[in-house]
Image (tube, rainbow, N blue to C red):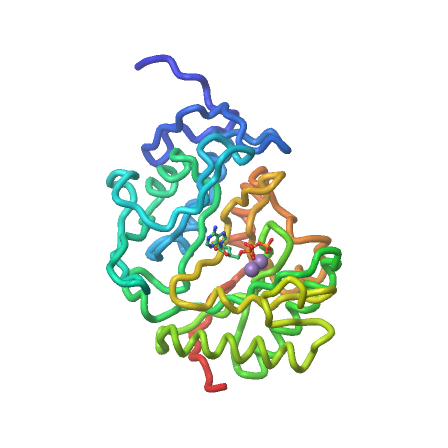
Length: 301
Ligand code: ATP
Ligand code: MN
Ligand code: MN
């Protein structure tokens, strides 16, 4: 075996049978986080992460030379990941079919990291039935300068409004600026019905609370408010998946939190890839028991 540079402490070389090249390469200049450390993070979080990543068409944010250099959002693939990553053929709006990525296991996950992936985004529907969403996501995008306590309290308000309709929802801090309110669904409805619900709900919320929310994506409409980004809920749209690292300054992570915790957080970035052990313990702990799980049908709106 040829000599290789040693992985960073706690490096993941060889985990799930995937060799990480250039584990010493710094991917996040802000925190000095290396490719080896990122791989170690994903290897540690593989099990809880695959509950959300596995069996779902995924898109990747890849930055092969680190996040300061060229990054791209990859939706389709013609086989460049070898047999570690699967595919599902999906009919495109504009006609024809494209191959979307499906990551079945830890080997697939680490292969993506070896290929320069930082972020994992997912469709709102499972790969074995892409026309029937299994979740809604309301992505709360605050205007610049709006405090996080306002975002958290807005998320709580959505939670309450959804609750009045009999829907349970769960908060995810994005690792960026906002919160995603995730609503698990049985697969009883198709995309047009789910998008219609998301759009009507967002508009109704913005009409009832115009000082706090807007359902219009135009930045000019945001001014001191929060855009309820309901467009995550149309066929082909993606949202960042739980435990994905973010291509941001400090290698922050999109993380599930409880409603109780959300009220206490200073920002949407409480965790980074350095917090693998904490996140792993939390994923199996009491605070997040049942997070993202609810067998519920979308009501008529
Ligand atoms: P933040 O809390 O900072 O808003 P976010 O993940 O919600 O973080 P958004 O800018 O609101 O970021 O993006 C919402 C979603 O749009 C992303 O999670 C992703 O799935 C999708 N997305 C991001 N970049 C692209 C892209 N280049 N092409 C298509 N979809 C993208
Ligand atoms: Mn957002
Ligand atoms: Mn958004």
